[in-house]
Image 1: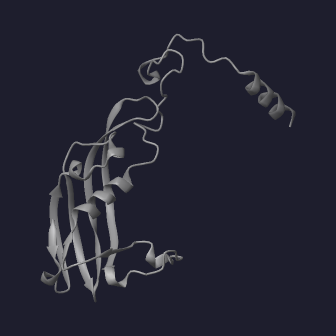
Image 2: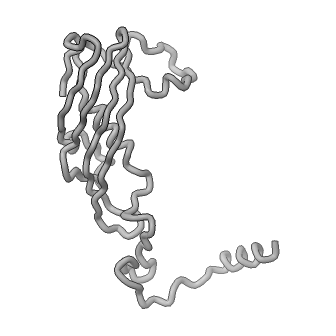
Image 3: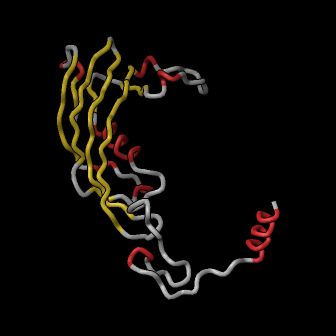
Length: 173
C-alpha cells in the first residue's frame, strides 16, 4: 500500500492486506504464507518524521527444526517504527546508536510504501529456532523416525569415548 505523505495532516489510519510471498528472499525458502498479511496501522506525523504503529497478522507454514514436519504458525506482531527523511540520516560510515535510534528508519520522497515494513515485521516475529511445539521430540538419529508419532525400536545412541571421559570428569568434580 502506498501512502501519500501530503494526505496526512496529523495522523492517518490505514487497513489493508498484502501477499507476503511477493517480498520473499531466497533465504526464506522454508516459509510459506497461508494467508495474506493483514494490518491496521496508524501513521502519525511529527514534523517531518513519521511514527507508524499497529497490529500485523499473518499465518505462516513452516518446517520444524527438530522433527522436519510442516506446521502452521499464526503471527500476531505489533509494529512500532519511526521514519525520518533520508536527508536526516547520519553521514558517518560508523557511529554508535542511542536507544531512541534503534527503531529509526529513513524514507525519501513524498510517498511511502508500507508493504516492505509490514513484511519485515512478520519476518522479525518468526523465531530463530522454529519448533512445531516446545515438547517436540525430533527425529531419531539412527532410523530417522519422527519421535512425536511414537517411539522407535532403536537401542539408542551409544556413548562416545570423549563423552564417557566428560561424564567421568563431571562426576569427579
